[in-house]
Image 1: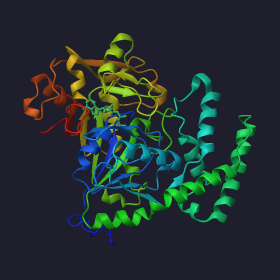
Image 2 (image 1 turned 45 degrees about the horizontal axis):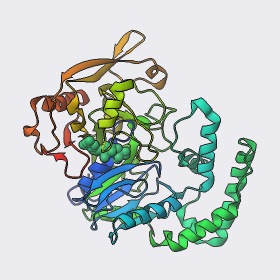
Image 3 (image 1 turned 90 degrees about the vertical axis):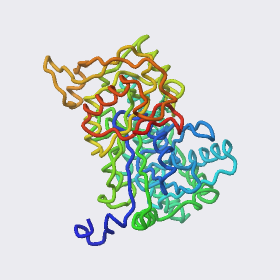
Image 4 (image 1 turned 120 degrees about the horizontal axis):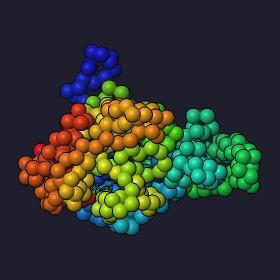
Length: 441
Ligand code: GDP
């Protein structure tokens, strides 16, 4: 590696960097896996998405749904970092930190935010809300966190970077320009009266003084140095491969890349530094928002799985909405794992399946009478019907089991079957929502 890239430190002397990303539609349990692994890591970095994320963590301090804070915050030795690819809502972040401190007084939370990270503004949330309303029954199922307008403006070169908050004259001028354009859209398209840029200015000045200036830093510089010093770094993805704007079920996707390949872009690390990619998948499927979901189940069958899923049922960590649920979709997950370039897979929620006598797994789709094991483009996905293979259930509570060899035979078979379907090794197995609910191989 040292010879291929003149300025790179050799693999032997650089740290281990693992991107932990979703193989599906999000909500795979990435927060739990990161909270579990952060104990042996030095740094955890969020590299895309924003407060639309809801990473649930159950640890000795209690239960948390983290939206913007990285999932390593509960370890005093871990530096938690928000990278340049993130959609930073300072007001929500201040509130989230306050709520964590209320729950865990005295928590030694180390946070760093890159100076080039762009700041999400109130008009992004308003535009998101108005656009969902305009679409009526064609709505995306947005969390209304402002994410789509935020990234649209970022790439239209209308965004505001964190460092711009540190010069009042400059900030006022930039906000005036940003709101001139935003108000044209608000008034012209949505018949809204528009917003006063001075409200955003006053609020950002307060947030900078009371809060943001304590955390602003040159993150790429810090991360490259840490990597060269041999630090262990986790890059925390949000949502999953099927919500990626390029590879996902477009247009029912999110507005920033959920793919591990984006992690170097969203952090400033060299692409060749990310040597491990852990794709997280659930032992069954769940999705929030609109878009095709081939192995989705409905009615009582769905409510039973929904109530037994997750830590307290499958309900959105950000919105509280009931998640759509279904059987494990091997076609979609294999595609998700490949899109992520996964070097290993973590499976969560194996315990949830303990009530099933038989466990269906979707192994292929039928589209216009033709069977395929390849994940199709969205236009064809809408016509896909699931083809199931039925595996025997294990029908016993497995939450207290800690070693793979101690699992019931049918649970082992299920994991091995899925591994065979995915073609990538399952190295991590979770059998409960708590930090310690892990099965060693
Ligand atoms: P994330 O966004 O990928 O971090 O996932 P969420 O936190 O949105 O959703 C995952 C849900 O599954 C949460 O309710 C977790 O507490 C829960 N969870 C994670 N791992 C397991 C597991 O192994 N078993 C069970 N029953 N729940 C789990």
